[in-house]
Image (cartoon, rainbow over all chains, first blue to last red; front, side, top):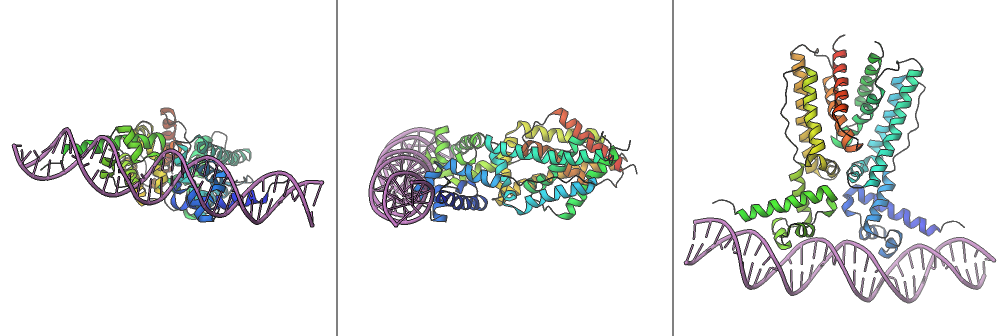
Length: 193
Length: 193
DNA sequence: TACTTATAGAACAAAATGTTCTACAACGCA
DNA sequence: TGCGTTGTAGAACATTTTGTTCTATAAGTA
């Protein structure tokens, strides 16, 4: 027996609205009342799905906070792989709901274990992707194994996040080109001695 | 005629409590009722000072969000200056109310122009400090003028913020030593060719 | 001392939050 | 198709939060 389509429709409609409210007005305004007014779904039905305000907010959060999955590309050269990987990340930060909501996830993480989990999981994936790129470059002999990979990974990912979430500066192609250039030059230089 | 001490006392007591609530439980819980319960100050008095919830939250915010001022040290050598500057920043992130509240400021900045201003102003100061350190190193001839200073500044500051605010990883002396080492090696390497 | 002003506390109105019940419509299954 | 089940709308209601207004009292000022 499959799931009642009405349940699915209600959940989807409600969370769409909750997501929009969360992005436009902040977490403070995500309430059963506001979602009800925005969707026409009755308050009692919403309470049926999410038993209290915190529950509703968490659901909206989890839905929007689920970060995009970025498949790695490791066929070299290093600059090209890095550029592609960070380009996808940049695109996600710039142009997806996930990018818009990321600051709120960051804030929630300081008081909410679940939000923190969402972030650390995501970062683990991101770091693994970058690491795969470096490992492939080392495998090809493009750089030697003594480059400080861990530090490079952190810098590679930190810069776009910092720029977007904390400084609220533009994240564009030109900036990314220079960022990748610098990372590559560090890797190459450190592997020549 | 000077200001009534009762006004000052009430403001201070109330904002102390609001600050603590903001740090411990998040912005959602900063309300006249909660502050009244925490301080014994009557609700009506609180409303007299801050006419609504948003007003009270903003006040708590501004108070706690004012970042520490970090005087620069530029007497060299580069590694030592950088280490000191980033060490102070790290200390602030780790051990001050400002560091604890920073994630919430970041989140608020995405919906609140004033919070955004607080951040960008702070970053301008921080960047200027790091730039002064590099400028002094260039002046001493320790590195040449063609090092990519702007990028190095961003990486220098981005890493501790990213690590603390986004990854929720430890920010300790060992990590900072390695971070500064890498920054210096980039600067040195780029100024030798 | 006399005037002014801040606070506490109560009483109140309005809104948000959460609960419960009923009638009805949509669904799955036989 | 028809029947039992389940989800929804809507009303009615209790509770809590939010915001306002008033009065008596205490503290500060001149």
